[in-house]
Amino acid sequence: MSQTYYYTGHDTIGAHIAHRLGASGWTRVDDVADADFAFTYCTHAGALEDAYFEQDGLVKNAEPGTVLIDLSPSTPSFAREVSAVATVSDLVPVEAPIALIDPHGAEAFDDLDNIVCYLAGDEDAIESARDVLALIAGTVVATGGAGTAQLAKTAHTVQVAGQIMSAVEADAIRRATRAAGLVGEMGEAGEPKARNAAPASSSPFLTELGRSTERAIAQDDFEGPYTVEMLMAEVVAAMTAADDVDLILPQLEAIMHLLEVIAVIGGADMAPASVSLAYRSEEESARVGLDWTRAASLFSDHEHHHGEHGDEDDLDDYDAFDDYESFGGFGGGFGGYSAN
Image 1 (cartoon, helix red, strand yellow):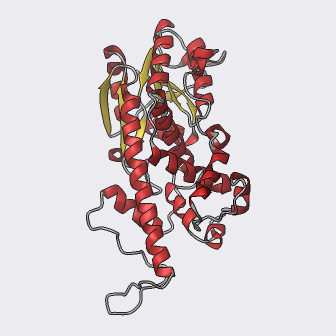
Image 2: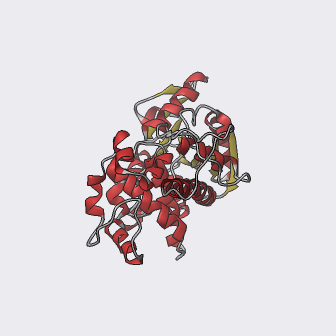
Image 3: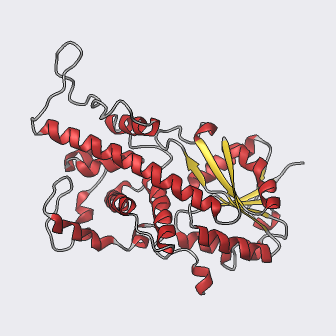
């Protein structure tokens, strides 16, 4: 018997689901009341809350017994709220944040082995969703009750974002040192390497993700289905989860600042390797469509140029964009429905 599904949210994930489920004989419907399963993936907290709790949202309009699968990055507290409200409405809530092992490249969503879904809910919900999630992700990891999948996704985000930024900064210091004439790189025959040749790896002991990030940066590979916007959503969700337990994560805060800058100057739809452009010249950024004049409002009283470092007071400039919601993040926080 053909299964029906409804989807709302980000087009990239929607296209992935449509491709995978369509190939398995599933039918997409336009009205959630006609769906056996409903999927969501949002990069904005407000959009995610609306998808579930507005008058035209899933909770009010899905038929009893509909399986609601949220693939979005959010927080354990918001996931528990969705679970509680959906269960009271005789729906089957499933928490299944989707994650990529390697987010780089045009084929990031093509290889199922590159895709992970963390899965949480009660036992019946997990069993209802496991088979369909196996159609869209090569690895499905059951984590336990409501909130645990988002916690697992948070840990995934922290590690992935950290490795990406480590590679970005390693590349930045190599480029800056060579540009300053302090070192040079030679080819195999003793000839200088071509100007745009990939820089030597910073370490022979990098992780696979570290090597992949370095390749993307060296090749100026700034296009792909996984974008700065999506990484921002994951980072802010992780930061919000940490804030819920009064934990400060300085590494993620620093990463978020750089992602915001790239998004503001026009790179929200570019691949994460584009963050490396924050350390390069304006001319290089302009060649791929970024406009640094759009960043002027982000810096308050100090004169500051990307790629140039002043004294420690320049860090205060980042206070100008602490409102993550302005840049498409989850600045409003999760769980807003509870306060309404």
